[in-house]
Image (cartoon, rainbow, N blue to C red; front, top):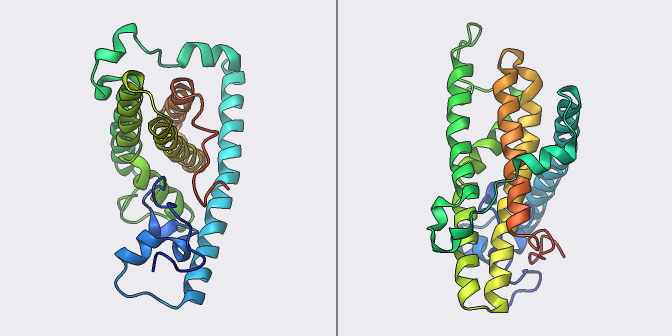
Length: 244
């Protein structure tokens, strides 16, 4: 099966583990192995095309999310450049001796996961909410909520793994390990990007929770910028199949 034409070697190494939303399942060996009963190739290709359209729409939402953050900064009298300087999670000098789970970026990712739970719990307590938003979302919010929930606990372990690799790499430098660090960090950044896009869709839907939604957006934006500072080469990493 590994020699089958059309499969992309190693595409599953730096993916986001969301096969149901992947646009390349028909070309992924790991998906083939993990799926006991495969549909026809045409059905898989149609499935991939639908998912590609979904992520293109979420990409447009990310552009809107970045515009929204800039507009909010302008409204609050903040210069975007000053916002970057003030919000990047600085790496402490002794970080090489610290456990990766105590790194500021890892802490920020873990804090975000808790913020998500608090936000949904607060929305469910609104007077006009008859059913839980998580179990019975309105159709227009179903897909962004899926994105938020899928990546809620995904970002933290990816950041921790990237930091652990970075710390090891400082003591035993190697191109292969450095590539793995950048690839892992890039997957974390992509998850943050997509999550930002999803929250930008929810932002106008619950005006009474505007402040808490804004806090999440700004927190994610700070985390995104921080990861880019700690892993400056991550965005340039080429993931097999996805980026080239």
